[in-house]
Length: 431
Ligand code: G3I
Image 1 (spheres, rainbow, N blue to C red):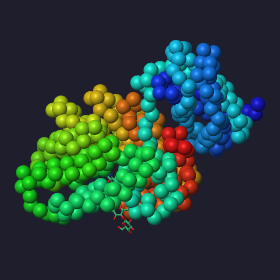
Image 2 (spheres, rainbow, N blue to C red; image 1 turned 180 degrees about the horizontal axis):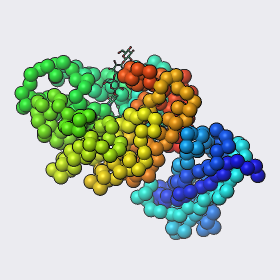
Image 3 (cartoon, protein in one colour; image 1 turned 90 degrees about the horizontal axis):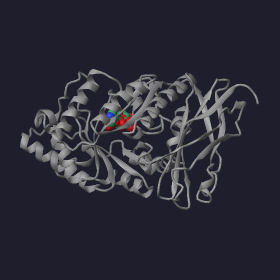
Image 4 (cartoon, rainbow, N blue to C red; image 1 turned 45 degrees about the vertical axis):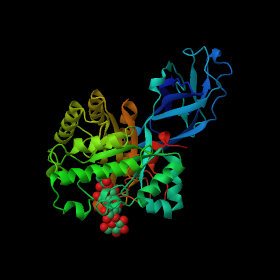
């Protein structure tokens, strides 16, 4: 066998389900870095004799492509779902092997088959993969709509559920734009992450310049939430109830809500959202909280206070608008874990990694590594529910409008061609 790249399986586990399928999770790693791109095939096959005909067949081999980044090849986590005929008395003694084959170059497949062990139902999980989308682009660009509709589990309206779109006049609601995205998602069997209910930006002038009293503002806020969340009850599964509550100075941000209502404005918003849809997950969402900092500590203190007061909050959204190499897996995990200790979910809600444009190949490889840090931190954290990119194509990204000279922040380029960052998230995308 040719020398060069070594590969193998690690973290193999067979995840038991009881609904006619088994999910097998494993990680493929390559070491040594002779080439920039390596492809190989993987398949899952039963190995326990007691399995009998229950496991219908080995999976058809699928191709896996590794692209070398600044730190070499990033291990690729996969989860393969295989159909089974029924659950059997042999549950608990079943094993499967992951088999690697057909490498594109001289890959030495050391330890190429990993045998899993059965673990229980509760651990069947994977983060949902989502993307922020724009209603007008879904309607106008078939290539964009095809990717949005077929590759993701979850869609977030990038702007269409913001206050200035949805309630442009007091009590006058316009749901055409958000309805278009929700209908698109339902048509494609996707869920929707609602964004956002109480924010300091994109509020209409009637609200920000209205001179309202505290009781009036409470009425306006609770009526908005009841109407918007109520409309999508049962369809929008998670809401960014409060967005960007903490300022860059690590104090609670001054906004129409905190100055007009007071420190209990967020509690009121969460309670109104819970009333409007008791089953939706309710998040607080913020940026620059992906590592230990005064700001991330301030958000944690705010959230911990809510939990202590019995405010119905379910999770924390980490926007994760980042630059190259600006996040670390331990840093993210330290944040995810302390919310887990409060009993809360976390999610990566607005992932993008901006680079100088035109982007160099080296920067795109480094960008993939930064995406991999986010991906792997979420996969490893039991409370991480989803990873959403803020857009998915560089053609439609907020970055160039807000950061001069920067862009190319997303997994697909402006021509809808995939980039190295795509290869990082591909294992989690719908095929
Ligand atoms: O597309 C037009 C372009 O045709 C025009 O030439 C240009 C001139 O200003 O404007 C472009 O649209 C802008 C658009 O961003 C581009 O992405 C809009 O003016 C601008 O209002 C819009 O901003 C949105 C921003 O929120 C508003 O604050 C972004 O779309 C949206 O991605 C961004 O999303 C926020 C999240 O809601 C909260 N977290 C941060 C995130 C990024 O700022």
